[in-house]
Each structure stands twice: as structure tokens, then as C-alpha cells.
Length: 404
Image (cartoon, rainbow, N blue to C red; front, side, top):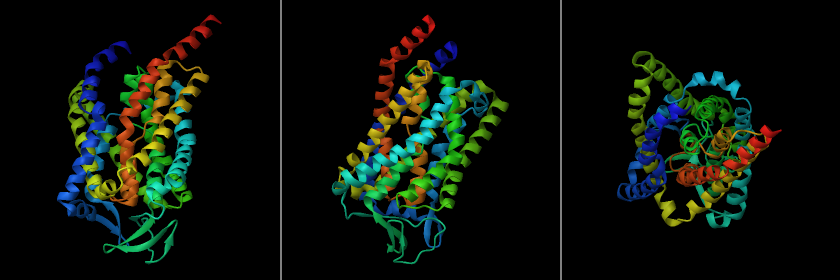
């Protein structure tokens, strides 16, 4: 893939300098902008979140956020060549390793690490008695005073909500991040680590399709075990709105654009136009999230730190599990780097969307998923550097095998 990579290099570097490389900066500016907006216009985010589809008196889908999140996901799905899934069999071990780490290991390590730190070690710092108000699970008609999982149904600002311990709300957000392997930014990380671009695309496509089934199953199971049970129909609706709908729209758009305008126009013109849409949608969503959570952050600024620590540990753990297994399985470096990083990186767009839909824009769960965005770029850039500095692990092994 010498020549294709060479032609794509300027474009990839340009994309990184414009957005991905400074994603942490943009997120930090969104935190400040959102908090200032919340102070200047405290009713704005609340009004927007109130523009929802209600079921049994409980808000289920925030229409403005749903629109923002669709346009955040759609450009990502358009970039995926789903025809490459057919070639996945030829990739063999790297694909199976990725699926194993992403779905058999990562969700459960995230659950354990988040529970240890948020539910035990940091519980006193967060506030053992602190509570959060989240949406009543879709499909349930519970009376005020009824208990559900770890929460109690109460009337909050005229709407029936579920009052749960604050640390459990953060815990739920971490779970949603842990079951969302990356399907977008990993293309950038793989490129920077000089990985196999073709293999990365295959794994991205397979992850997108596997999420349609496994995200709902694991989400429902782990949230239920964590005493924040969510009915299956809520997760199914979440996947349909935030994954399936943009996936289908992206597939149809890609097929139509290439058939009518050609692949060169699609890659060089159309995708370039879509990139700002993703950026604007993501940053708009983050501003809204922080405009509603500003008071919580200002009253306890260390909240971000308490959430970030388990997320950081989880990211490093999953990377090293995948990377070491890749070495044991005698992968080439070009396959090992993306195979390890696709599990370490999170699909924060889906996590934010699901947390917002299931628990509400103002929930601690939504805030936790945003913290995932905040640490994503610096941590993943660190892992890229680790990969580049350990290439000799794999090349040395290949030389031994060749000698034998």
C-alpha cells in the first residue's frame, strides 16, 4: 500500500492538525463555553432537553441532541467501506483478536475498574450521599416512591425521574464507554502508528456491525448488574437511532456517491465536506452537556479527575492486553498496532448518545462519557508513541522465525 498511503499522507496530516490532534483543546474550550453558557442562560439547555419524546411522563429521546448526534455519527459511517468486511476472513487472527478483546475482555474490566475506583476508593470524594436525577427507563410506568435498581422514583422539576447515587451514574457512563470500541478515530491512530490501513478498515467495519448486536446485550447486562437496570427496548431504540440509522444512511450515501460521481470525487471532495459536520455536531453536543453540568463541575472540579483515573487505567490495560497477545500470536507489527489500539480507544460518540438517551443530558452518566472524550487524544497519542518505540519487538521475532 505504498502509493495509496503516500497520496493520503498530506490529507491525514491536515485532518489531524485541524481537529483530531487538538481534540483535547476543543473539548476543554467546550467545557469553559458550556459552563459560561449555563451561567448566562441557565434555561437554554433545560429547554432544549425538554424538547423530547415522552413515554409515560418520562423523556425518552431529546430531539435536538438526537439531531446533533446523528450528524456526529453519519459522516463516520459514510467513510466505512463495508465491502471490506467480506475480506475479513483473509485477515485471520488480527480480526479475531480484536473481537475477543473488545467484547469478551474490555466490558468486564471496565466494569471492575470503574466499580473499584468510583464505588469504593473515590466514593467518599464524590460524595457517599450525593445523588443524581436520571430518566426513568423507557417502557416503565413507575409510581413516585417506587424503587428501581439502586434508585427511587421522585418528582423533579415537574417530571418523574429516578434518583440514584451520583457515583452509580458516573459508573453507568463508564460502562457505556467500556462497551463501545472505536470505529472512527482508530483510523487516525493506526495511520500515525504506521499500521496496516487495510486491516484497520476491516476491523472498523466489523466493529460497526457487531455493535448492532453486542452493544445492547452487554449494556443491558452490565447496567443491570450495576443496579442501574435499563429495559432492553431502550437499548434497542438507542442502537437503532444512533448506530443503525446513520450506518444505513452512510452506506446508501456512499454507494450512491461513488456510483454517480466516482470514487476519486467521493474521497477527495465529498468526505472533505463532511468532516466539519462531525466537528460541529460533536462540539455542539459537548457545549450543551457542560452547560447543564456546570454547577456540578464548579462545586466539585475534581469530579473530572475521579472519573478520568479509572478510564485511563482501563485504556492502558486493554492496550497492553491486546498488544502482548498480538506478540504472543506472532503478528506483524503493522497488524499488532491497530489490533491493540482499536480496543483501547472508545467510540465516545455512541457512548455520549446512549448515555444522553438513557439517562438524560444532565446526568452524571453523560458527564462521564464526555470525560472519555477529554482524555482520549492525549492517551491515544501516548500509545501511538509506545507502538512506534516497540516495533523491534515484532521485527525481532520475525527475524527469528525466518532464521528457523
